[in-house]
Length: 634
Image 1: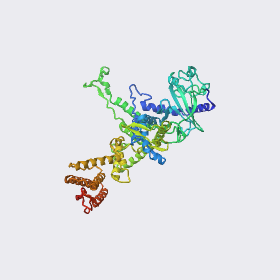
Image 2: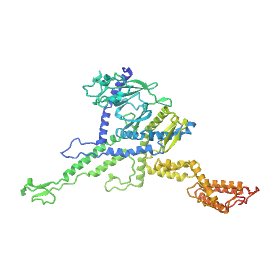
Image 3: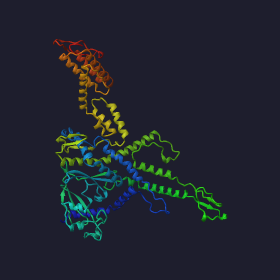
């Protein structure tokens, strides 16, 4: 099948874009080498000279990655759902639970995101591809090398551009297994890699942009494919061909099948290191920003080691008049220098290498503003520098925190795109998947929750990287709002537990409904014990208001039925009720007043004696004399 005019036109645009971005490609290769091996000396001044690298960029990247990791896992769930109508709002938490399960248990989402984050910090942008694998019937997440992703020369991204291209390198065996692709020995001979002399090139070879790994490969077992996404009035059209044979359409052009709210969407998500000028190639990674500092540090470190080579190696001078035979002289530990030979006193280095290297590191830290809480004296002030004032420390922490939060916000824009794409695939391809098993139990989702009528955001706060601050804030909220009827009490405790570990709320927290049922059942059992003469002790962590309510209900029941109660049991129940009332008074005086009113109301109610005569009890007793409307007695 021959490619149409549209594909030929886009192929020429791809080659033009590759030509125009060649300086960018060269820089990316340099940045990769700096991250994985460090900068090397171009020329050694003498044999055996130092050639070390301080690995500044690599260290800063490893220090920054936990910040992005916590943007994923600082919350109890990985995403937060908000229903767009009354029906979806009622099931938004259950839908969020399912997406959390998919991302954490079914697909390697976290590993792929962190791989893309590493690429983003090294090469300014990380790319995720999220799609449905029809053969395996599952959601797939892949990372894409930015150098293998081409947009127009002035493109801003896949969603806005007229076309973009993913360069794929596949094995010959993989290609032969894909029956949807054009097969045949002649086809494979034209598109597979190998020697440039053996490869069949297109007629426009002289105009072709040749770049190994992008348009061709030396490996004979590898095929380079261009997967082109062309924007059309109906959405997207995808077609594939090899740059070695652009006249062959290797797969039938197809439309984009994935939809979200009835609109087609493409599967690529970009994670940006920063927002700078508009344009796909505008952001900078940590390596690019720190390369000048790393070059200076490498120079200082190598110069320091070179100086140590000279200054720490013994050097001697001799008096010409002494006539010493220096050729036969060998210097060994403990030996006495012969007459006429004296050590040369080497001067101190004119520059303090350690101080200057510390200076450069401090500049690099300030430049990229990694999370830090240091309060030490400014190293640029030298040994005599004064300690920073509290106001200085506070101001610098605020500025640095704002910068860090802005970086988190930028990252979350791409993360949000990844999350809703995963949910969109689940809604479109698994609409009847309503049950799943996780955390030791089975979950069931209402059909209404399998919907695209949700706004989906990454869960957790942007400043969730600071664990100590999360715990402190959650603790303060708990102290301020504990017992407030306008605040969800269960969520307060969830926040406190989740601030330390997102898994703790599921393990330790008992839902309010279950807790109330358990407390009521436990109090009923204690009543049975007291009715049989066994004492029951009120504990400080119990729900005293609920237990008083259960006790009063039992007392009312006994008063109505006229069931006799022996004096010992009556005394035990009075003491037990008094204990709960006292503890409730200490923890929540308002609820204690309500409990007192209920007790007085019960004491004032008419009581039925065993013989069926209804009598009015004595007026309200004091807490020390709690009512016992049992068997017609008070």
